[in-house]
Image (cartoon, rainbow, N blue to C red; front, side, top):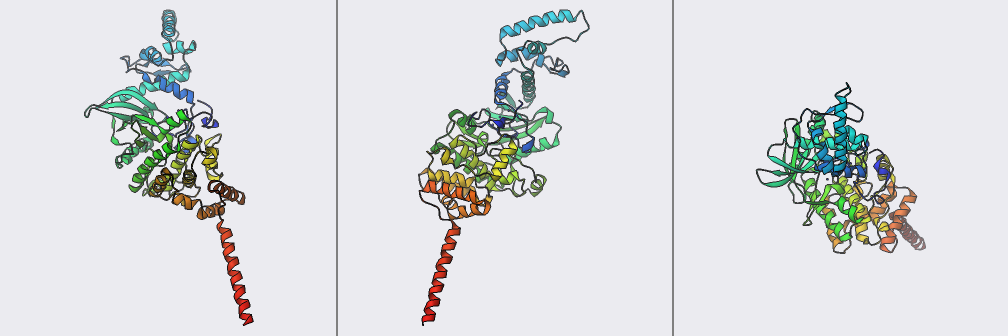
Length: 496
C-alpha cells in the first residue's frame, strides 16, 4: 500500500517511474504523485527520495527504558521522546544513515560537551544535536526516525499481536507486519497515528474502513480480521499479502505486457463486482491498492474511501468535494457529485489499466488541480498510440472504461469482465466494440467540440482500418433516401 517540498506531480510518472507514485492519503499511506483523498486539494506532498529514507529508517528496535528522556528539535524546543534519545545511536546505524565511526565521534563530542555544560548554566546538548550539527543527519530524517519510533512503540501495546516489522507509513497511518499469537499467523496491522487519537473524524473514517472490509468476503479482496483500540491506540488488523503492488511492478518494468495486465485487471474487476453487489463503491482504485501475491492471485486493498451506495447522508455531506487520487479519479468524483456508482470505480480501474500497458498515467499536470482539469476536459491519447503493440480490442476496452460520461462507460463490472475474457482470447470485445462505434461517436459529438469529434473518429479509423460511420451522416443519408422515394412517388402520381 506509500510519501519534501516541491509538488511531486511536477515530474511525469514515465520520467520518474513510480518511485512512490501518487496514491492519495488513503488511511494506509501518504502518496507522492497521486495527491490526496481527503479532499484531493489538501494533500501534503513528499518526495520519492525522502520516502526511501523513511523506509530505510523503519528497522529500529523496540523502545528503551528511558521514558523521560527529552531531545531538542532543530528549532531548539524540547520534545518528549519516551526513550528515543536512548535508542537513537542504534537506530541511525541500523538504518544505514550513519556509520559506527560517525556515532563514536558524536558520542565523544557529547561527553566533552557534558563536562563543559556541568561548569556552565547552558542547556545540555544531545546526540541528536551533534548528529545534525556535523551534518550526519538532517532535521527531517531525525523527525522521521522519531515518528517511526513512536509508531512502533504504540504498536507494541496492541494485545494479542507481536509486531515483526514496519511495512509502510504515511500521514494517515502506519502499517506493520505482525504475528497474531492466538492463531499463529502473519497479519498486517494498520495503526492510526497518536496525533489523530482525539480526532473524531479520522477515528470514524478508520473504523468505517474496517466495517466496510468486514462485509466483503472475496478471494480478490484483502480480508479484514479485527478493528479496535488499546487505550488511545486505534488499530485495524487485516490479511497480510506477501507480494507486490501493481505500482511496484510497473516501477520495475516501466510497462506490463497486455496478457499480464488483462489478467490483473480481470481479477480486480471480479473484486469490484463483489463489492458493488454488496452495495459498496471503492472510490480509490489505483496501482498501489492492487496487490499481487507470489502465486499470481490479485488482491484489492484499502477501503479507506469506500462508501455504501445507499448512504445518502454521507454522499450529501461530501458533495462538492473531490475524494480520490488525482491521476486515477473519475470526472464525477472530481465534480463532487452526490450520485457516485460503479462506473466511477471502472474509470479508476481503466486509468490503472492505461498506466500498466503504456507506462504513463492518462493525464499529467504540474499539480493535482491541473491533472483533474484534464480528466474533465482533455481528449485521451489512445493507449495504442503510446504502445503500438496493444491489440485493437484492448485499446477499445480501455477507452470505454475512461469515457468522460459515466453513461458511456461500462455500467457494471460484469459487462467489463465479459469483454476482458474476450480480448484475452484475442477476440473482439462485445460492449467496447459497440461503444466505440456508432453510439460512442455519437456521445463524443454531443459532449465534445467538432475538433474533438474529428480526433475520436480518426483514432477509431486507425484501429479498425476503415472509417467509422458518423450517426449524423447516416441520418442524413436516410433522410435523403426518403426524400428521393417521396419525390419518385409524387412524380408517379402526377403521370398517372
